[in-house]
Length: 552
Figure 1 (tube, rainbow, N blue to C red):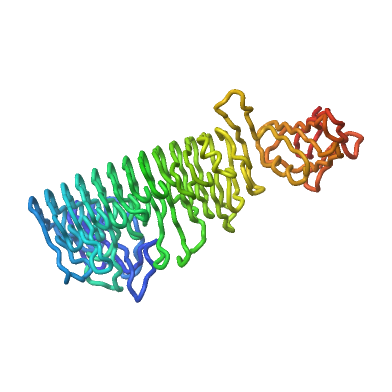
Figure 2 (cartoon, rainbow, N blue to C red; figure 1 turned 180 degrees about the vertical axis):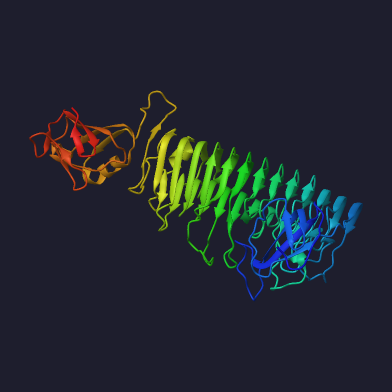
């Protein structure tokens, strides 16, 4: 419903916009904000009523307005650009600037050098940039921002078959912060639904391909980023619901990185990565750095999946996955961690929820490293879960790792996890809420298989037995031995699995074993207040709703 009367024909392209801030965009400052806006297609109109072909994505309440989109367009083809000036100190000094156009076309352009964005699009619907070749775009922030393609507030545009070398980003978007009641509709709205296809970013200075907090649903398909510094990501994702599909990264600092800014706030979540290949990554192949110090939500776990990763191949990286205050779900990945520098890891988890399923993790490192390094926060939802995961470590990697889990004891879930071997100190410290099911598959048939279902404890049982109650195998086999044949006492705890069986064996070289229970798990014995197990004997107990019951 609008004030006044309209009679726009079916198919007319309109733009709806208002003073409302875009959800998840940068924090407003000095009365300026990234403000709501989107294109829509008219199904019918008459009088003060407009019916669109689909519901609007956003909600508009503060001075909502609607305008008809111009049918003007432009086609720019086939020439060479060269421009660089030391006096060009204005942000946004672009080589080509197109605004408010319907389906503009830029193709077969060669840029030898640029002092800012080569192609700058603002509020263009269904733009097409094809076969853009950029040799150099100067990155001198904040004065000159050397972008291959910069988009503000456009929708359903395409950049394809292009190569950008030696620039800040091959492609990026941004929705400018504007005052309330701005009269120019081109400054409103997210970059939405743009597609970047078969493009190359070579030697980027900040990120090969980049998005900002106000953008949504950008797709990178068949794109490659290579030859970047240690702090450069191939794909840098802010905003929401972006996709990286069939892309690759090589010889660069990071692969795919989703993040939020510290000082200016913003959100980043809902990103999907599929069929991604990363080679020779000097940092993390997949990273999510959310809510850092200085962010309005600093330290809070982002419960919405930040990254959903499927079918990733990492052929050499210092870190496989890095998560800070983020939720990451990864399936069907093969990750090789390699190198001779300290600090390598399969997973770096800082107060995050990381779930890895149906994956192969391999390590060939020759310096001190931590397979899973964690720093826990206060959120009880923070955890590391591995399901149906194979972990293979070379001899040097196994020798250079103290334990599997290092740092603050994390909440761990292991289900059908296979290790080629365990470091000298085993799994390491994990939180009492952990649920563990694992086994080793050593290469030599003469090396015994270790398992979460079989334990051997000696000496101070009170310190060792808590490990037992984290195992979720249906039947646990535990051999107990005291020092100097001294009598032993075992306090029966509450297990993580209902109907679990535990067979306790008192070693023949040990003293007697006395079974008792704590206040949370009753030991149900017939006509006995406690159970004494002689050396060389065993007893099987079953966990029921009433406590531990002797099964044999």
